[in-house]
Length: 88
Length: 324
Image (cartoon, rainbow over all chains, first blue to last red; front, side):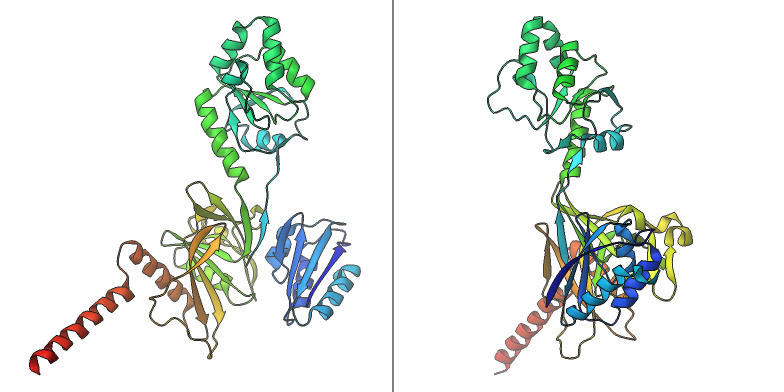
């Protein structure tokens, strides 16, 4: 299954180390491949360093692609995560 | 594996700020400098166009005026000069540059201002400037892909380590660094196709020299092991994909077959290396590289062995015939 969505970074400091770690932790254990695209740059969202390279600021739009058997639950968790600023 | 192919769009401002020192640039007219985009990597010395021959003239090129062009312009009558410049220049010109530290004729300055074309000058020799600009724009416009992996220079060759998250790419890179090899980029590798048909890999500036090791965190290897263990860019010679050991998969046992991966139209040798506890990945990666070097020197271990084997079989066959 392949799902796509657009999410907005709500964290005041953007997508810095803490929320990036939370994303990687959240995705750990799921089989789906997750890709984020910001400003034409696509990265693997299961890697902290890749997430940090995006240097996404507050209100930056992130195109999310989730591919795999558990895509639905992964996407739901991700969108919820962006909504609650990954617990920050 | 190689997902994005990105097309570069660069503004004249980018080029000006990035290469101001290299090309010794100064601004004469800064009209629309920040907005103007360069759409073609070509540079033109507009000799023929200035003489009035405009057939096949491409307006999207960067225009470079040297001594001959400026002297020719100055020799023309004022009206004719304006007329020729009008024919040559348009809003589509990304920028105009004058070499040899020459003065720009007032008509050229006015017209650049009018048409919102940035006008620059350089003290560098025109021919040198032409070569440099061609190389710089060629580089900026060359296509690139971004991939998930780790690039390490091992025994002088560029090794791109790929594989799923948590397979041990960064750990392998750390091991290689500890043995005296160099890190180019961890996690994200950008690959550009260079003139001459080879691939060059480099990392994003933000994460340069950084490695993320599970259980330790983010470390800066340049600080830890010294400047000798890092490098900014490297030609990519081969790709090794680390995979979890699968008992049902038949792995390459002899090395006679070679597989290639196509990146931006360039074929790169591709190995699959199964990983399991007890297999020294760093040693295996070094061995792959050394074997690759040996092949480059004309010695192919598997092929040489095969030849020897065939010779032995033929010899036995001959002996058997003699005996019977």
